[in-house]
Image 1 (cartoon, rainbow, N blue to C red):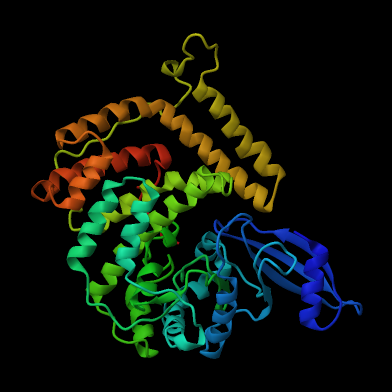
Image 2 (image 1 turned 90 degrees about the horizontal axis):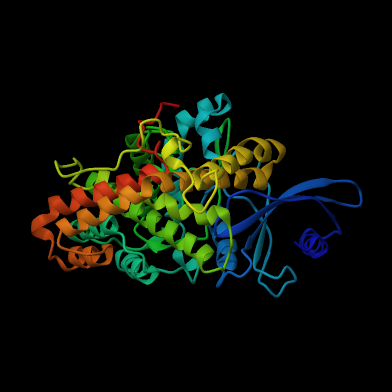
Amino acid sequence: MDRERLGEIVGAALGAPVDIEDLTRLPGGASKETWSFATRSPDGEVRRFVLRTDRAGSFGSTMALEAALFGAASRCGVPVPSVVASGDDTDGLGRAFLVIDFVDGETIPRRILRDDAFREARAAMAGQCGRILADVHRIPPAEVPGLPGGDPLEQMRRQLAQLGQPHPAFELGLLWLGQTRPPRSAERVVHGDFRNGNLIVGPDGIRAVLDWELAHLGDPIEDLGWLCVKAWRFGSPLPVGGFGPIDELVRAYEEAGGGPVDEAELHWWIVFGTLRWGIICIAQTMTHLTGVVRSVELAAIGRRVCEVESDLLELLPWTAPGPGAETVEPNESGDPSREAAHAGPPHDVPSAAQLLQAVHEFLESDVREATEGRVRFHARVAANVVAMVTRELELGPDQAVAHERRLRSLGVSSEEELVSAIRSGISDDRLGEVTDAVRSTVADKLAVANPAYGAAPQAG
């Protein structure tokens, strides 16, 4: 990051020269980069800001639109940081950017959901979210020209097809969404990513709404459904962002003038949001695989798709596993160092699994303990990736045999063929069998990607 040019941009916006201090890239942010920094003026005044930029090598930018959304949202009463400066990739930073005021508070969901400092805030946040979303949906579309719109279900179908990754569980979701779709409403401004993790929270509750890059014109209930997607509960049993019940969210939204919320329609948008998150995960990992952005975080996201598949299957009408559901069980001890994990010829010991286990222990202990911020976060991600590959080495061969057997039982030879069968309706008379097979495959993937995912969530 060009510290000197950033100082010139912010100084011009503030009307006085400043020096940039404590410029630090923050962890997370799969599609954008986020930096924190402070400015010091000649008289010694220090102010804190946040810089958001497109990732290097990314195509297209929403930064100008985000800046307009911040202004329009503020005028409608939505708590947002003030915009200090914004620009495109010709303004000296090499990419589009947005500088906003720093808002003190917490954004890390697990801290918000578990720390005692936010206990009172959590109790009020579902209602706060309802009121804030009612304000979001009052934003006049004319104040933010250029927002995309269109048929969200068709867009999702096209995006999944373009990614070229067959996922029968997603096809089952698309089948149900197409069959049960509620009437389309008049399009309003939709935040598009309103969830725990994009909210700045203090002990008093929500202080600011961040990350408007996915804003668009659509059905306002989409925002409520997205907030209730399981991925944003972070292990909590509470359905609204992990911090509250749905009835509180809906009541506050309706009382604040957000319009009536039909229970079945909200469920439809929760299913839609779950599937949408799965497709986003695939898209993000493809940016790594194609070399656009090389990142261990993006690579790991691809293996979390099975978590979303599992969530999706639980939301569909065919929720109970039938008698045909099966999974490949791990070895009795679960220890990759067991004798069966010996190195095969011509290789010497340690085995591949044992080597990975050593790297995992190094990342978890030495690296994580000696680092902080973004590097510490990515060390944890890398350790999870190593553990994941270790489990695949152990379980993968048996899982592959079981997967092939399941496909043959359905009369197909690949997941691509199964996807085509679901999409064309050929398999409708065997929907129970198909669902059992897909569920078994998802369970096998979870056993490798995150075996603890199916554990019952704990109250916060």
